[in-house]
Image 1 (cartoon, helix red, strand yellow):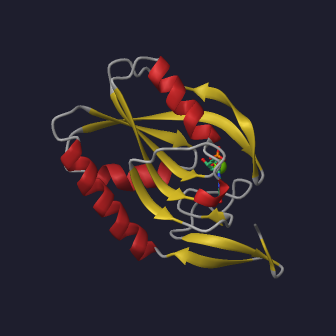
Image 2: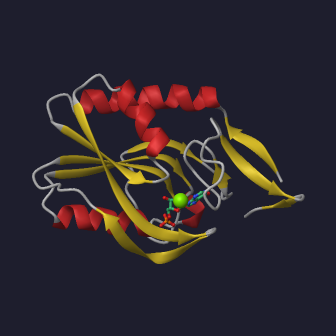
Length: 174
Ligand code: IMP
Ligand code: MG
């Protein structure tokens, strides 16, 4: 099983810096709360927060929605911090069907956040089942199953410094 590089470490670094600049200028006069969606967003969030030049706080949300390669369409919340009155920026690894992120956004609004925006590293628009508004996007990618930079296949490959595509014995995975 080989892995082809789709987005190199250098391209990711450059794009993360650009996103951080945009976020820093738009949240300059706010008290930003970054909410990383576990586990996939942990590496992206770590790089993003270090590239910001404004004060911020970090917390995490943990949901379960994905078994192997398919979204089950429902989520179970394992961990959800207090967000009342907060300017929340959700940080997600990838927007696929959109079901997970829309459920999370709903929960955050219901819990009384002052504002909710979304920053996603990757977007697979071809797979969308529900419309999602992405305020800050790293890269739009084709409909392929990707790993690395926090994203996993059955918990593996999160540590790759790039975004890669798995090639399984010559058969392309999705
Ligand atoms: P959605 O509800 O279908 O949008 O699912 C989004 C979640 O599925 C992401 O947070 C990822 O954890 C996972 N996911 C979707 N596509 C991929 C992929 O290509 N590689 C790894 N994980 C993925
Ligand atoms: Mg995942």
